[in-house]
Length: 100
Image (cartoon, rainbow, N blue to C red; front, side, top):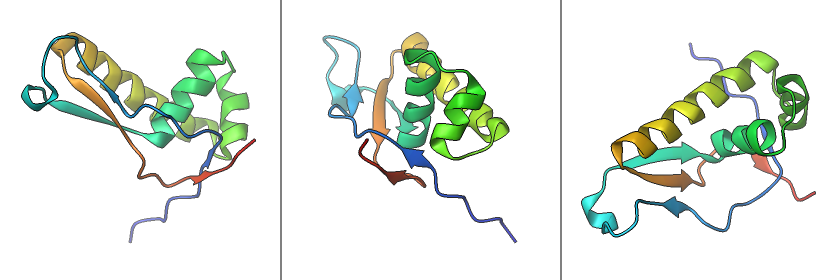
């Protein structure tokens, strides 16, 4: 039996949900799906420069879970940049959105 996913705290809602290479129609590109949880982990650790332990506390998850989410997010972003794929930020997530 699979363990249920704990709710994760996400503190923002992105306005933009697609990033793609310039001058290539979206219909011709493969997509990489980046979840809102992965985006939040990137935002806290790479943009806000928080330590993983601090970021994990903000998301209300363990540091090891944050590390797995962050590793997945970085791999997806690297794949999109290197292979010229579009990045689609999916609103579907396990966390709850909190305005703060």
